Length: 497
Ligand SMILES: *[C@@H]1O[C@H](CO)[C@@H](O)[C@H](O)[C@H]1NC(C)=O
Ligand SMILES: *[C@@H]1O[C@H](CO)[C@@H](O)[C@H](O)[C@H]1NC(C)=O
Image (cartoon, rainbow, N blue to C red):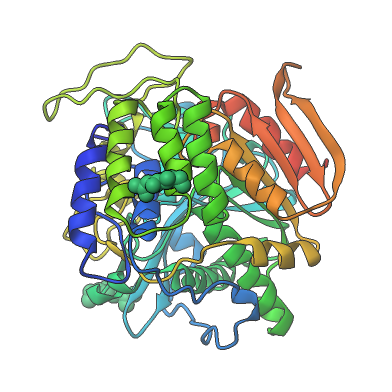
């Protein structure tokens, strides 16, 4: 199911049926992966009474709520994964440390967030600390970020054993994967009504509470350079969280100061109008839709409108495009077979499009959950790549521009990168967004190269942020072009450009 895009139409119809009665964003519950979730979310946001946009700029908001203290009494050593993960290649045992567990972020309701932490391969104390966030909203940084993209291991087709990822980012940093918000993956709330109150603002506040308490459990990383990275809907989470961290740093006691240095976001959403324009233009310019549909989309549906006409148009659009992987448009799709059957796809440039299924199988094994110290309250539902519990979303701003402007003014290091074969949050949308921010160009458009000296993409340095493309990469850049993505993160961490 992980790669199914024929469901595009059915889901759209379902989505419309369930959304008419509410004024909040509905995310339909059956989506399987990060990109589908984002598509549905954007559609739902567009076709209904707008969500309350309270978090337009969290930096200027007062009353972000008081800091919550984790009261679980757990120590770092309690979270240490002593024996390694089940199925982990023996050669990798004990060459770097792994931890996993929970940080409570709300005692009253019983909300607790799950993390997986991988120390850097060599000399962790000298390496930066990276928080990695996936999007959705509602998708797992453990299942997507760690297992499919940048973590030390991927899952083999047997769903039980792991392989070593060649370009794991723990070669250059300590990586902290957070399943956020509560309801995603192993993160939970003991008050189930919490799930319907999910939204950008609470996600940022819970993530901040998580961080402060995580640093209390891992105090020796407190002075490490701290960076937040991620992709997709995390294009909202990341600037929002960075904003909260900086605001809290400015007003807080020195004991809770977080040494934030930068943010790096891949194929992230930024601003509704430019993202939508980018989506339409990308589909047309990559020969995925007809002139007729394109004309109708741009002439009649360019602004958020509440019309049957535009919804029908999206159905037609889905029919025109057919069953391709919209977030890696030239890539293979995972065939859907009767339950329990899998085919070993021929590897397409090293990529197995069904790997998400193996990850889902792996993370539902009882011995794997035990090793991760996960599922401690015996969740009554299986681990899923994207949450089936979070079906409403309370607040999501229209734009990140005000937060970006402020982060830039504060001197935070920012890299926006874009895999150029993703149609969901396509490179042209990101370019329209950056253009709309009117930043001065410092170093104009130029190619950049990876370790093999081949052109890996293109780069522009603006006054305030750097934009880079990654050639031939889909929505999840490190998954589709791992070598180039690795070069990019190295470059960013070394603070070159
Ligand atoms: C949630 O409830 C379980 C079972 O009562 C308890 O063990 C756990 O500590 C609670 N979690 C939080 C964060 O309060
Ligand atoms: C679409 O836009 C064109 C040009 O603005 C207009 O002539 C046409 O009536 C519109 N069609 C619909 C269905 O709104």
